[in-house]
Length: 291
Image 1 (cartoon, rainbow, N blue to C red):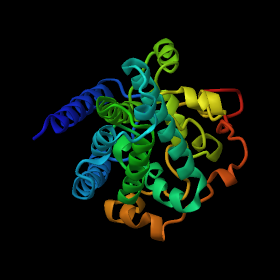
Image 2: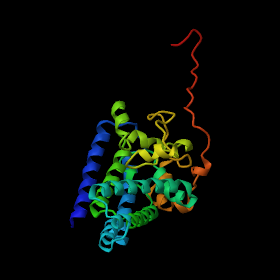
Image 3: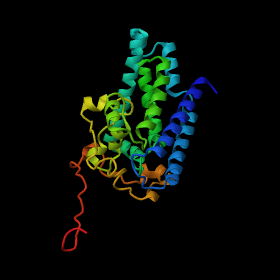
Image 4: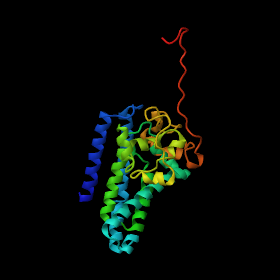
């Protein structure tokens, strides 16, 4: 097992364990589906994704970065910038590519069919951050490899970015409670769980916001930022309106969802109206006032 594999596996297990314990100790929301059932589906999908990537792209973005450095491919290999500016520029560029790619998967109807597998989760926790359809994983990897070839980033930066992207995806999808003040400060630098949870709202106007994974700046810059869900974090509904039953999103159905599933109206071309907070039910008290 090489150093890259050890670093990636070690960081994944470490962050996964920490976030899982944190979710148990300080959950942000009450889960609506049995965790064992959801985790069986999500971890099964993650395992399929991992095996497929290892089979088809054993070196992936790291391999492309190595070849780009050796062959002099990419803008940074052409410009020969100092190491620190090259590293910063590479990280920002790769993160912007991930943001734009995420936006694209909400815009293109065919790509949305793949991406809705991620959004169809009825709860959101650490496993949601890595739950994607295998075809989406392959497309995302090809886009990332093309971006690496185009920019020619240092190999170390690509490894740092890959590990960070994996870790922040688990962090910002986690069902954890952060103090409001801390969340306000953190979301100036990184996408927090409360910030990204808005993106998993059943309300279309909220689903099509907060596309960032690592850095929160792109959403603010391009006008896709939404601070809070209208219904609040504990009352908001997670998932897609057309998939509200656990049996609709079992592992076998998730794999077939892009082909046989109902895409709904979540594409950016069907943004819909502004979501409203749920109405408070009027209580009928006996004559004489509240009891």
